[in-house]
Image 1: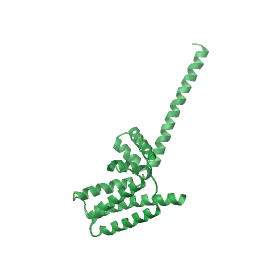
Image 2: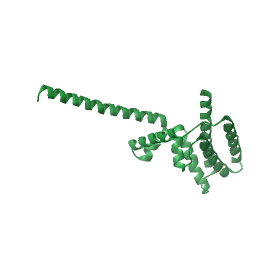
Image 3: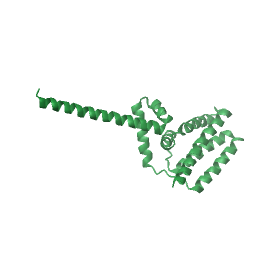
Image 4: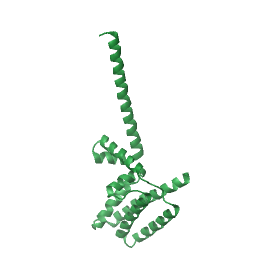
Length: 185
């Protein structure tokens, strides 16, 4: 092998190694960004999809999907109206917890829809919400599961109380996001 051929071979090896290293670093950066953005939802996705690469692909697709939607903040009057309705739902809990849980579920869905989230099936709504509200999506899932059990008469009063707390956490996060955006403008 000539010196020129050896140099060319070494250059090719270095270039290939550089490309591989760059790819691996990009993958690690993407993984870190997704993990930081989604928090516990990242782990939920890995558990759901069974492998890290599939979960990361799904999370990235969620971000792309939600970026294409027209999500917007509520007008202050809308926020006040929804907040008043939430107070009514909470008050109703004392006399009719099952109905209050149904109302809380519907009200949260209504707020999401008013903000521009599509109202597909529950899993799609949870996936969409996870992009902008990753810290509360698990509250939404837990509350919804309890609400489904309540529909079948299989939820205790304590579970219904817990569902109401979970729905309140989601609801308040949806409303607080508007407040932060409005204050930043």
